Image 1 (cartoon, rainbow, N blue to C red):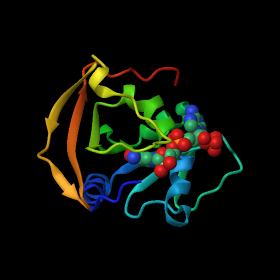
Image 2: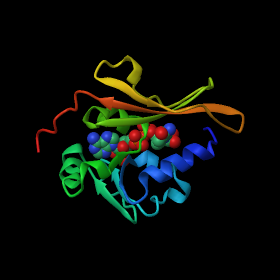
Image 3: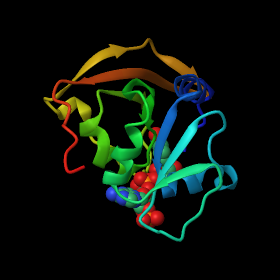
Length: 151
Ligand SMILES: NC(=O)c1ccc[n+]([C@@H]2O[C@H](COP(=O)([O-])OP(=O)(O)OC[C@H]3O[C@@H](n4cnc5c(N)ncnc54)[C@H](OP(=O)(O)O)[C@@H]3O)[C@@H](O)[C@H]2O)c1
């Protein structure tokens, strides 16, 4: 995992007071398995006996989409992990991708927006550097947002 304080600050600024949607593994990867403060935390799990204080649990995408009707679309951010990103990106209008100039052995993989004709790069930042690693902040936009069906 990369230690990039500027990226953490970017994540915090963009999610504070918003609704964050994540898979159970991502929640459990946070310190103490605790939800993020000052955000509405929605966690997907198929495990109906799983409990998580301070989280709204959804047990299917139908349940999630029903829950999300309570919020403005602009306030909802999908924050991972791999499974949830890859299953939900087609419903999203934008993707915020931090690209790190480094080669590592990864265990979790994200859809490649550069190779998807439905998406285009709308913003690329200047190069940042933290702890000797160079990275950029990028925004992709979705030209073909999937409709939510089967509710
Ligand atoms: N770089 C980043 O931006 C970033 C962000 C977040 C996480 N991560 C990393 O990603 C990894 C975790 O990713 P992951 O793919 O293993 O797990 P994940 O996407 O966080 O969570 C997957 C879990 O979500 C639940 N789930 C998935 N689809 C569901 C559905 N349709 N209905 C109900 N529940 C559903 C299942 O939980 P149950 O097994 O309980 O049913 C599933 O095991 C960690 O290593 C984390 O550090 C990276």
